[in-house]
Each structure stands twice: as C-alpha cells, then as structure tokens.
Image 1 (cartoon, one colour):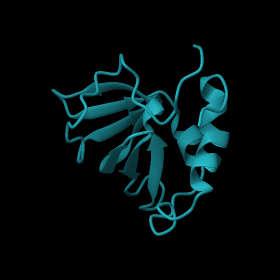
Image 2 (cartoon, rainbow, N blue to C red):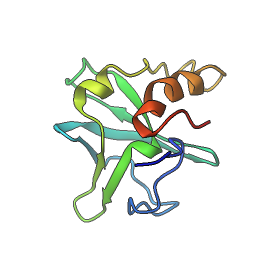
Image 3 (cartoon, one colour):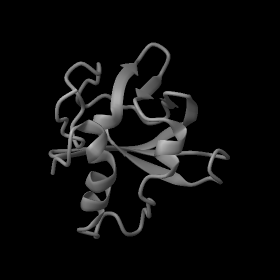
Length: 121
C-alpha cells in the first residue's frame, strides 16, 4: 500500500474539502461504528470524531483522516478501512485533553501508522 499520511484524506477517498460530514454514519470493514460528531480539516491534522453510541458505551473515538477509504455522499456514509476491534483497541479519546495534549498525535501515529507503512507525522 505504501506510506499514507494518516492526518490527510486520501486523494481517492471522494472527500471534498469543506464538505460537512457531521452526522454521516461511519462503517468499519465489519459494520457500523457510529456517526460523525466532529470533523477537523485543520492543515496537517485532519480527523473525525465518531460518537459510537451503544457500541462502546457511548464513547467517542478519534479516527485520523487517513483511515477513510471512501465517502458516500449519496447515502451519507463514511467508510474506513479498519475493523471494529482495531478501532476499539486504538488510543482512548478524551475530548478535554486532545486539543492541549501534544502527545496525542504521537499516540495515534504509533497505533495507526504501522497499518499504513509506518509512522507519518
């Protein structure tokens, strides 16, 4: 697959910069995980915050934009290329800490980076 910048949407994902994805369903490779609660398109730090609802006890998860394989605007679904277990096992998202925590990117790169050919900061 080569090295993928996990903090950027892939050119072939169908994502359109500035498109409002909040409320879109999120599908892992093995089923739905929730809905997008927040989207960051900050340069060099694109990510989705997904409200998992009852799937993992109402928690939110942060998914780097590089995990997005396809955006289906017609059906309002964002497909990611990770399984539910891979997402569940990822770094814990704390909405009160991640903005001020300089280590959060490193935790996500350390976890998701190897899926895409190595860490990319």
